[in-house]
Image 1 (cartoon, protein in one colour):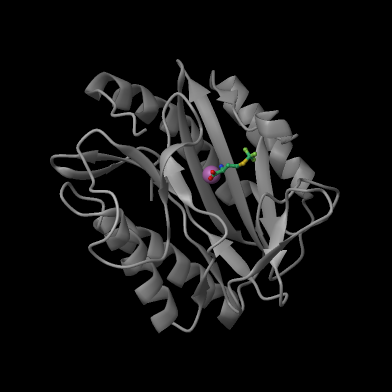
Image 2: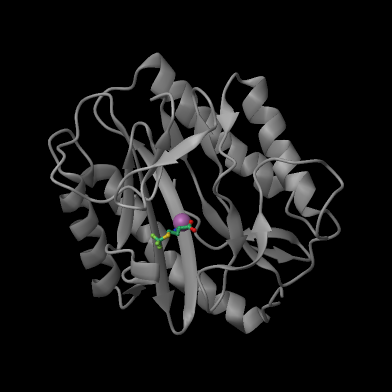
Length: 250
Ligand code: MF3
Ligand code: CO
């Protein structure tokens, strides 16, 4: 069942989103060669709590940390560890914050040290794929329009879109209906209605889209050791178009 949000509820989600986006803005300077993914997680958790938010991922279905920190071939749900970031790594930091009973969710990828030709292209394509998907998030379109636009663009660039993880509705709960696929057919699926709040969060791989799960039961990585990247926003469907609730400053 899709839960439609009132304007007041969307305002609350926007305020939760301000904490998530502020955290990502702060990470731009914090992430560097030599930092461990645990240090990055702790910095995020401190940021969230000191801004009055609750890090919703802790204990979510047993997930142990405030953030997912997914490096290089890790697609999503990477555990923060003692791993020290190295030059040319890419890392995705994903988090959900609750404020005043409502949630916001955003993942962002960061270049560690210097880019390579491949990391730069992968990050550019993945971010563009997110915004191409968001452009389709208008009243009257269908979910398939979002998925198709993302897949079509990503594949035209020679990369692949992960199928095993999707975007989702969000509100008082982290995962609500509907599921938002990042691939599919235009004109198909649920119609978009004013007041829906969704995440769009394409994960893009340099190689095959297929994933496998680590023995921790959470971390998904590419089967061929190719790189994976992700950008995610929470957005509301409004009569004036998509309203991004986790927007960052330039
Ligand atoms: N933030 C994730 C999402 O985009 C959810 C992470 S699962 C968790 O849906 F267990 F880590 F919370
Ligand atoms: Co997320």
